[in-house]
Image (cartoon, rainbow, N blue to C red; front, side, top):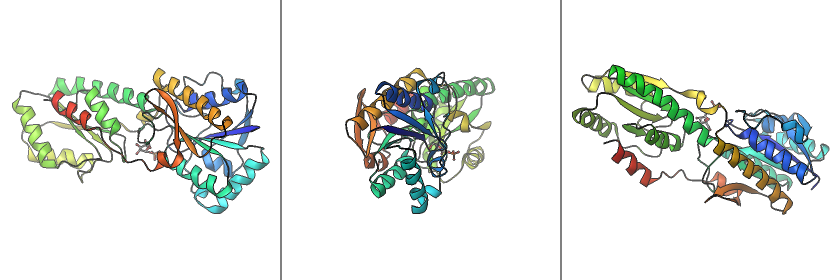
Length: 324
Ligand code: F6P
């Protein structure tokens, strides 16, 4: 191996910069050249590639987003697009690729690796924490802290006005952010994509809350919630069905994806970045580097993609008990 390429793809996540930095510096340490590919697979197709050295990644560990930028490339889903990408990699002298992102990123990487017999290593980075084969993804811890901080602030105003707030958090398919931030911020109810317990149960629970003396409430709703209503319809429905509620909706949106990464995410990203370069030098390919029981591990890239989004039943129980 003479040169490693690194790119970030899909939705950005805080800590991606720390992961790039670790890859670049690990290459420098191992005396291998390193190229940064801008705008994910799209930049690879358009030959937007630049050589990076240890100093190119100075002062980025604390920055959110990704300085290599990110994209979701439609062209990479075509054979022609991938052929262009392969030609550009060859011309740049790159002989292994590290892709930092989520399941879409790994799906592209896997197809590419099979088609051109080109080593691809994945590093899981997404705020959703929905990748199989790793306990945590880069960006999740920071996003959780951002969400809890925001809900704490919403609670202040909710309690001043005796209001019910519905707070929408990210998670198109995964409820990890909603469930954990909901517990962390003391939400009364948490609605997640992995389960649909019905609106009746929600109404019953709100009635009980009122009876038990609660004057304000927070309901955390993951954006992919399966109640069949969007958050504004849900608010309207509650308002029409139950008496005496002053209801507000707050959609947290993309603030959840930004911001300076937490120390946990910086350390995780550093470990996984170094682990990815080590794996390439050990001759591994077609794998995802992950963290399991605090140890850097590797699983086949397929494992990362085909993950089922299971919810932690114990956590659900903790949420029910602590919101009583
Ligand atoms: O995959 C991360 C994620 O934040 C999802 O939770 C969310 O649904 C999605 O990205 C939104 O992505 P974008 O706004 O970039 O299309």
